[in-house]
Length: 461
Image 1 (cartoon, rainbow, N blue to C red):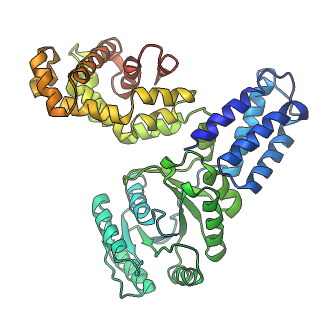
Image 2: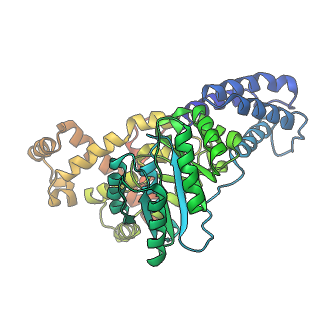
Image 3: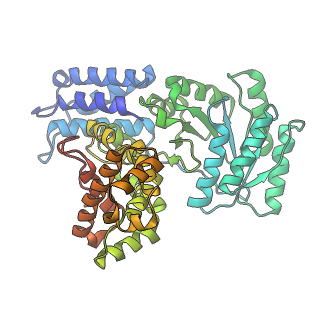
């Protein structure tokens, strides 16, 4: 997300660097470029106009501190305005009510609403330690009820059954009553979607909202529809009392216009981003962190939080102890590290949050991407446990067998063994700090010499 906007803004803002003073004249061309970049990112025109006007007003005549250059001041102004447009801070769900707190999901068909219900259930259970019941009031699509039941089983949330011959209000009230009896903290209510906004749909969902009085009504919208996402959110907001927005499919949206438009047009905060198909692929929306990513400054805070949640601490500690004792870093350890990276969103997810990567991230990902990591894992899985623990025993005939078993070529096996040796040497040098930090440094050894501007920046220093 934001790849195109980041590239355009980085180029535009570089032109202002080195100016002695910010004036209307010397920022005019840069502002024109910023305006063009925002419009190309499919940010709504009223948002762009206000944004440019506010940046100009704040930048011109700003006193430049001795420690900063005018260019740095201008970038800070742009960053502050991006944060202001998207909302000053993360707004989490407000569940301060007598249990069960009801969260109602609204949105058009195909936006990913049912999947988002499961993601949100998982989020609340894992991060806020809440017990959750999910229920579908979509009486028009039997598959939606079945889909939610399957997803509820996957995320281990309580599922309240419903059928297409019931009234949506009766379904919702039945679920709330059942949750109260079971002392469940949160009920997430999935509602019917339509292909477009219509009076019948709005009337039904409005009736449902009045009946169950949810503490949160979230509008789920596909980020890839750009400024249309913001306009549809406004139509829903006019008919319903929305409390926030969830942008889905942001991993497929290189522009990011919806994230920059929704708050301004609806007055409602973006609360979550859907960043993939899996049930763990839901991120809290932090405007300051997103602004930092847009300007190519990375998002190390989110990266650290993700590492805290997803890295297997027991395995990391075990590896640290092993390296400290002087034991070798074998191929089973290598596979564990690859799997841990995959759990954190793969190479793309990590590079996106590292500061100062810019175009280097794309070049680096061409060399070490999720597909190549999957291939490495397949090769390791095709080895015997003896070969994984002691790679030195792998001769040519073993390489042929491993390549056949993993659907790869002998040169791929050779490449893996070479990369493992490089990482093994690094692990010996950096043995005092094991785990993901070493894996990130080790990734430098997997880059071709000179590729991607000299590899990746050191991680964890």
